[in-house]
Length: 260
Length: 306
Image (cartoon, rainbow over the protein chains, first blue to last red):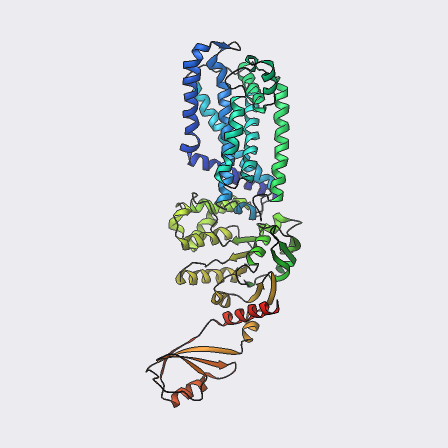
């Protein structure tokens, strides 16, 4: 092994990412199939059956309006769940020790898991997008905003899943945050409605929900309509990514939940 | 050059347990070193700190002159660890586990694949290379952990009770394998509860008890300290009520006696007495492992002095 340190880092990172991607493809009936089925049901029930009675929203059919939100919801949930379950399993089975004893810097451990979570989020996003094409047309107004917002959102929630897994001591503890925080924030984050439908007070409360910004910025990229300024969405998401990355690295440095 | 240099290493756990009390230890390059001690003595904590699995409270560690705090990446790259408990992903295939571990050490797949194949063949796991690790037997899992620890060609191999729960045949084949890689230049540190294993394999030894090194010397000097040795003799005919005058012995059953002789005393004198009494011996063995006797003496003395 005569590689430079940078080459060794690159090999270690690509090894970790490959392992993570191989993992979620190996268990595709648990990772890739369920979101495809769930989101198809959303399209049928909310988009087709109920949506046809709701009429237009933001100048689009209800089905067209909810597609970006549903894609984003699937991406967020899967990016989070992938890292939370993979890293917690590694702790639970102790094979995280393979990484700790190896000369892999903490930032690469974080980057590897986050890349794996992001990859699953994007894979699911592509699957849901393909499914949505059976129900509606899919315009893309701003390709750069669309892609960068979905990638950044996946990265952010993958980091969130990592922090959850670091603290988790049981499998129950990796489902608490998705169930009690992530799901309510997603449903109240403008996936199925425009916040302009809400009374002013609840509109202001909704602005405290970070997922609202991601859903709307992504919808702006696809449809060209948004309840919030897109610049604010990018600023907030980058701020959260920076803050959570620093916190995750601090936890790894301290060895929280990993080292005795 | 020293393969490992531990200086005043201390560890106090959050619950107040002082697992290590300023432990210092040097291990030379190429050594086969035994780190022994009773359960809870601090062996696994020491290994945990060397391999970054446990955070230390104080002290320093150098691996091949590289300080673990100053350049952890370089120091870690020298070490291969075989932990006490199985710790691989049960769903991953055997070969994937090795190639992945090599990747963490920066070994490209073009080198990792043939290296993994070589180790799988050497350790008798080749037929199982595509099997998920959870389907392996206990002995195979132990061998897989050794293969994983060696896949990046470490200069220092640390084995924390590698033969625990392994049958004698497999244990002997693992000894042969470890002797071979030690002869090829790999420094080995071994903790084990099988003292026969340490006596057979290791050249130098440290005994740790209650977080302190109570003995650190070469195996030969340690064994030379034995002043008495006991043998079990199987007799051809029952002794009945005969008394073997002139012999320090204990009767275990009608055809078995235990004889204790002082260091330096010839075994011939024992057989002379037996011949005089017309007693025929059909087999003879050491009562216990010599190192075991010393180990127990040292630990007992340490407890009395505490």
